Amino acid sequence: MRVKIAYTVELEEVESEVSEIMSRAASDLDYAYQEVTRIQLDLHTDTGDLESKVKELDKIRLKLGRADQVLDDCLSILQGLDEAKKQMEEKQDEIQDG
Image 1 (cartoon, rainbow, N blue to C red):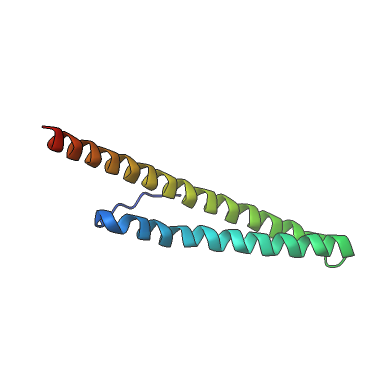
Image 2 (image 1 turned 135 degrees about the vertical axis):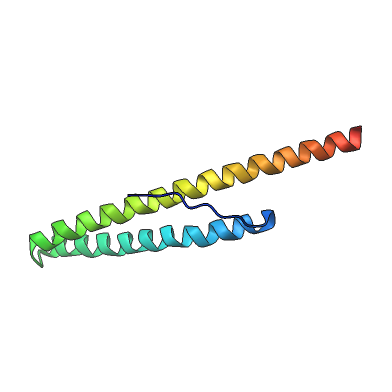
């Protein structure tokens, strides 16, 4: 079950926070790539048992799904940041024009 966690950071820290969150996705993606490559090689050279490959592929799929969820969260945060910055610029332009 996924739950939403909310906390506040300074506006200028948002991108750094998102970068740290993205490192989790990068780790899962790296793991998936390494394991897919290993399984692919094993299948090509016909080594190892098939049952372990099936289990590992399922584990890889789960990690990819988790990485996708993390990246979706990061996308939402960055979209919100972009919108907030645009609104701040608009207000600043109104102040300067007014």
